[in-house]
Length: 395
Ligand SMILES: Cc1ncc(COP(=O)(O)O)c(C=O)c1O
Image (cartoon, rainbow, N blue to C red; front, side):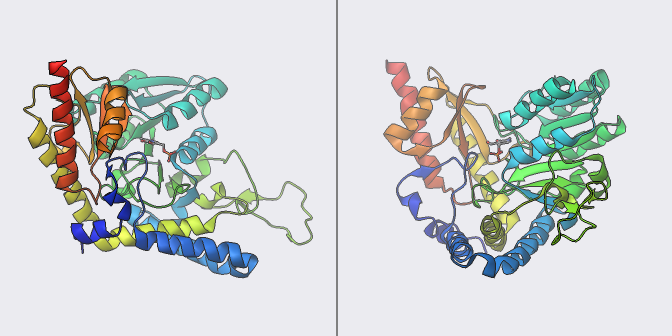
């Protein structure tokens, strides 16, 4: 059951600062931290003795995570972060030179850098469409770009890290499939913010992390590959765990020809893994699940609506995010007239102890309304912004 006061009691550092930057890193609730810490201690103290137990626990987390995402556990690989998943798909996809990839004008370097590597190494061509704060405009721009560019692959974020705008992915996937393109979704800013069902969205591939809106351990993430796309992606790396080995692994006799990648997404996992982190991620998913995913989403959107209400008529404060709640998320970008985002971000931290993040385009700061954010937190933000806006007018 969701109760804000009890939720905040499990996050003691909130007494020292106003934390509005889950969009960069979530903070871990004490019950999750306790289970994660216990897993780290057991793994490091008992080593091989607990290996089997940990592997079984990790497989249970895979099943729970898959359930959360509305997919099959065989379709999920654990990774270290979102970038891993995006880079793996781009390195494995069977591009031909000259193929086009369509992406948006609001992507994170986690998308842009693997894309530019694909351009350099595989000879693919990058095309962009414009994301708007209104989903109808985004859909139209995307549809036009699809017809104009005829891409093989679309790579796009579910929620923009620049403006917090939520893209109409289900419609976009339908349009992309109709044009013969596959879709790779970056869920770094959506998973944990609101319920995300990858099967309903219809995407071919997705990547995400555990350390933002799931508030799990840093160094956790996933790659989703829809079952019917598995054989399309030949992993760029291979190792023990990622293949079906038809030989006796104890004798290490292997002629190098008679093997194949696993028939599930674990073809992207090999070698010894930090299973304690996966267990920490499982604890985070269970904890948030016990509060209620819908309740968390409602809380975050209510706070954003409240913040918008407070700021929308202020002449010196610009709201760069969606105006309708359903087009946005708990992530909001704001600017103050006369204040460069870099300076504004620094002063909000140094003078007001508000943790947020600077954005370059649009020029402002990004604030995250998370499941633990309170109206008091936002009151402090509004008071600070109003003071800084006034200060500029006086100076
Ligand atoms: C939209 C988006 N994609 C990807 C990333 C990078 O995620 P990770 O650090 O999990 O690779 C971020 C991080 O801020 C992001 O906002």
